[in-house]
Length: 446
Ligand code: ATP
Ligand code: MG
Image 1 (tube, protein in one colour):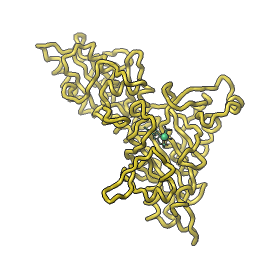
Image 2 (image 1 turned 90 degrees about the vertical axis):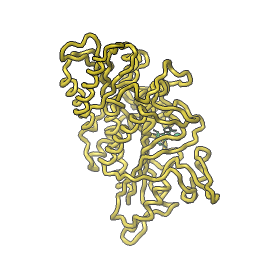
Image 3 (image 1 turned 135 degrees about the vertical axis):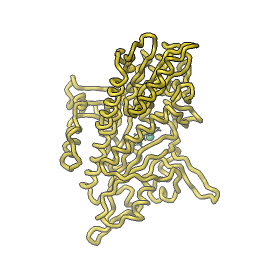
Image 4 (image 1 turned 30 degrees about the vertical axis):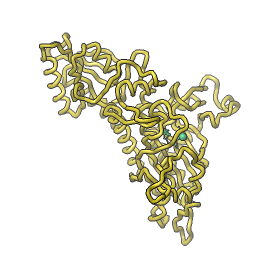
C-alpha cells in the first residue's frame, strides 16, 4: 500500500471535540468518522484493527468449543414480551415498526433470540452443553453517548450464550469463558483483571467484569495488586483446573464501585497492595440460571422429566477494545502510539526521504515492500513528498510498530530499522524480516 493512494485522512491538529486520548487519536489519524451522535463509520485504518481484534476473539471462542452463529440485528418484540424485558429495557432500546405495523427492535443483546433458537431445536439433555456465540452490531440508545466508540450507540459486540442441565455444569461453561477471556486479552497485549460485578438489568447471581486499567475509564475499581501476578498459562479445559484458576483470582479482593465495601477492602488487602484507580470494562460474563429459560419455556428431557436449562451470557466489546488498546498504548505526551503487532493495521512502515528529481529511495522502498510481502509482512510505503521528519512524526501517531527509514544515512545493504518507541538499529533486510516475523508468531501462539 502506498500512503498517497490510501484512505487515511489525517488531521493536522487534535480535534477539539474529543475529550479522551483514544477518541482524539482515532479522529486524528482517520480511523473513524462520526455519522450521527454515537454512530460511526469505520475507515480503513480503524476497520483493519477492529477486524483483527474480532479474529482473535473468534479464535479464542472456538478454542474452548463455542460454536459461531450469526443472529440478525433486527428482532421481533414477541420474544421480549415473553421474557418480560420488553417494558423493562426502557429507552435504551431502539423500537421500530415495520409496514405491517409489527413491533420490531434493533437488538441491544440477544438472550431472548438465542433462547428461542435453542428451544426450537434442542430437546434432550444429551445435546448439552450448547455454547453459541455471534459477533454482531448492537444498538443501545445510550443516554449520554461519549468518548467516541467507547460509549456509543451502535457498537460491535461478541456475545455468547451457554445452556446446561445443572448449576454445576453451567459453572464449568462459565469458567471456560473466564479462561478464554484471559487468553483473548493477553493476545491483545492487554492486562485485564476479572472483577466480581453486580449483575444489573440482565440479572442473575454470578458475574465478572474484565477491566483494563486506564485513568479515563468510567469504572472505579478497588483491587489487590497481587491479582496481576495470577498466571493462567498452565490452565487446561478441565473442571478442576478451571476451578483452581477462578479461585486463584478470587483469593484477591477486586471489585468495581458498585460492589465496593471500604471495611472489607481494608481488612482483606494489606495497605501496600491496595490499588484504587479507574478502568475500562471490555468484557462481562454472567450466570443467570433459569431467568430466561423459565418464562420462555426452554427445557430439555432428563429421565422423562422436563428441566429448565441453566444459562449464562458472555460479552466482549469488540469495537470498544479498539479504543481501550489506544488508552493503554498511546503516549500522548511524546505523540507515540504503538499497536500490539497482533492487531496493528500494518506490520511495518517504510518511510523514504524523497527529493523532487531523485526517485531512487522510492524505488528502493518498492523493492523492500515486495520482499516483505513474500515473507507475509504487510507494509505501507509513505510515498508522499512531505519531509522525512514530518513523515516519521505522522507514523509515530499512526502507531505501526516497526519503521524502516530510508534517508541519506542508508549505506550498502544496511537499513535503518526501529521499533516506533525504540532505538534505531542498522540491519539488513533479512534480519528485519525475521525480527518482524518472530514478533508476529509470538503473539499468534500466545
Ligand atoms: P457498560 O456498563 O459499560 O454500559 P454493560 O454492562 O451495559 O456495559 P454488557 O451488556 O455486558 O455491557 O455488554 C458487553 C460489552 O459490550 C461491555 O463489556 C462493553 O465492552 C461493550 N459495550 C457495552 N455498551 C457499550 C457501548 N455503549 N459502546 C461500546 N461498547 C459497549
Ligand atoms: Mg450499559
